[in-house]
Length: 346
Image (cartoon, rainbow, N blue to C red):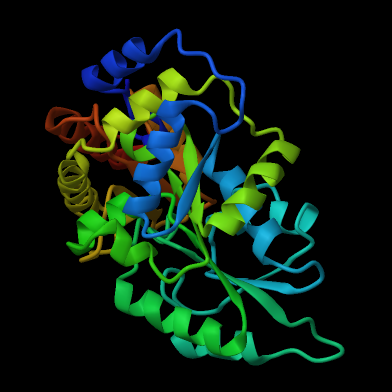
């Protein structure tokens, strides 16, 4: 079975396993007491160009914590259309943070900057003002689009002028940096807080982290505990995660995704955008009306390929460490075979 549903399936490297074994037995009770955890948080803060960082079980919890700290109840959280915090985090912005999601029209990954400006300026006694901008990079549902630093800086400037706080959902920020040929720090600087997944990109046992000022991270420790996210023990997991941060496999997964995208685009009945800023995500759209994306995923699974249906028309494939060129070639063959006779496959 070739499983391209998510890069959450990334496995640890031998170096990560060795680091975890070496750190085993070091037990610490405090929420930030473990030296391996503290070393990991210092490294992440440096990489993300912020004063401090805190480890989290998931990026969803890290995003929610940022929303609770930065947003104001009863106000709007302005975000991109189809952002992960809107589509895949169980309504946490509203249910816990009391924020009203306000997705911008137009391009999902990079709506016109004027849209951000209008959203930040609008508000009166009857329409709630915006208190938070959330930018996702890479943008998952737009096909893994890497948002360049110039665009982020424009959004940051608009937010500062409007007195609006800024959070970066940088779940796949390491992929964005690799695709754009820039540093993670260049993409993360200027935001009040930045969340990042570590399990997706590196196969790390520490799922995520949240970076920000020391004052905000001090508050985040309390919010994380309130949400049930105080992980203990952290030593072996933190040591493994720290050892994985230097792995340089990201560009290779992008090359595999480009090969997959090209192969899928050549198959009649599928549409795949040609993107210069593609990372490790490929989103394909079913062009005809004879079947749906969930049906196609079922047929592919019967032939040995797992993909994730996004909605009635679109499905997602993701490459990650552990997937190789042979897997991609085989995946293209499977999709081509199933698409050739979809009604027979059913």
